[in-house]
Amino acid sequence: MSTKPDANEQNIQCAILELMRDQKVWTNAELKKALPRKINLTDDDMAVGVRGEPLWLNRVNNALRQSTASSLYGKGHVENKSHGEHQITDKGLKFIHDDFSMDDLMDALKSRKKQK
Image 1 (cartoon, rainbow, N blue to C red):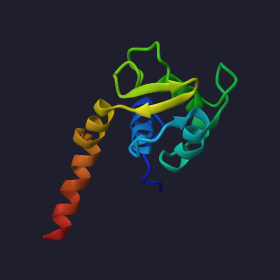
Image 2: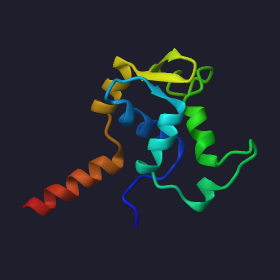
Image 3: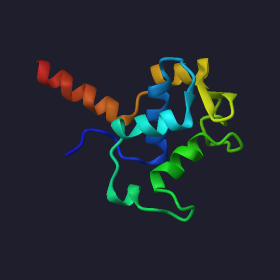
């Protein structure tokens, strides 16, 4: 069983921000190559969707779409450096440092119980 998160849109966005934590400029290709190490890809995620690409890649493209309010650009977490090049913003860095998911909280509580 994988400990990596599922490849839903929220987890893909978080994984992209985690990769971009280094504050370097990332290209689309670099992100798409690195993301499978961060998220769990199922057969359904790998299946070709309506746009002729695997579903998970469509979700990556959605996360990096500049014209969508729910994308990393729309949330102000990523900025465009050039065509197909992205960099995390201060707001994006703050989000990944301050934001805890329920899973993070549950993992921290389990870890704390084991230490006692």
